[in-house]
Length: 357
Image 1 (cartoon, one colour):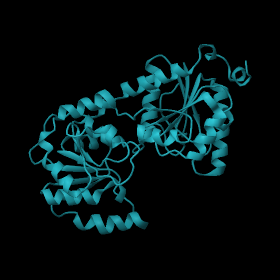
Image 2 (cartoon, rainbow, N blue to C red):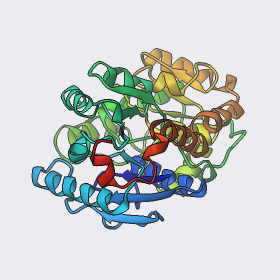
Image 3 (cartoon, one colour):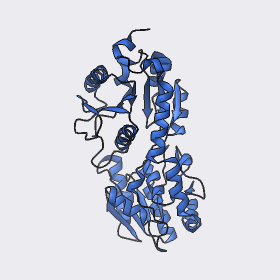
């Protein structure tokens, strides 16, 4: 197959630091190539992903109207030049507009809550030539309400980057690893650690202005350097592996409908149990009492911390291997592509496809 992938224009593929979706797109590029497919990528001009062909976006901002027009034209030009069997977008659905009425098979992947308006009009314009995927069944349930064909395919992690740690020290710390903002629940993680007498290492970036800045200054900073609460800053891949590997658990008690949250799968890959809340996609990631605990309040969070010795860390690693590995996720996308591309469409030019047979 000839597969054209797209990523948002803001970050290169793969990203230099943060950028979970860009990592997944890069894993798809390399995974599909290893299976003999020819893969092209439309992405940020600094992308270094080893796609067979790379096409740069001309606009750098997804939310800018002029850039949206530029990128719509850039994607159209890439399709004309590469002649794909299928187009798979991890970027803006608007960029697909010139292709929606054509019979070229298309996949639109959502990593966040879909807009009911755009999903509705795209589904009507494209009909059966467009399939939507969501990074969780939680996202797909929202999308289906607006129409279209939806299939959940979870996000994945590079298992080889995460070292399984079958045991940790009896005094191993808890780790909060996420952006330090209210919806991620850092304040609850701090309260639970203090009440249970556990050390807590906080890693991630934080805001310095507005509501996020006030949250950091008023609800996080006063606890740092006291009661075993420590901020360790932002972390790269190797630091993240070390941090999660030595943790008794990763505690991120979210207060919002998390679309997926790759960091939860990364923790499981290290064998590290997850303590979070039953919101968004978390019930699809964490099996209660097996991979961790989903809690509804501070009291339940404290109980979960006390019950951590009951979790077998091997189960956590197996969960990551069986459900969230790159191998599993590339398999699912490849199977989806095969199901969408009629045999008589393959190797036909875009010009032929744009002309009804």
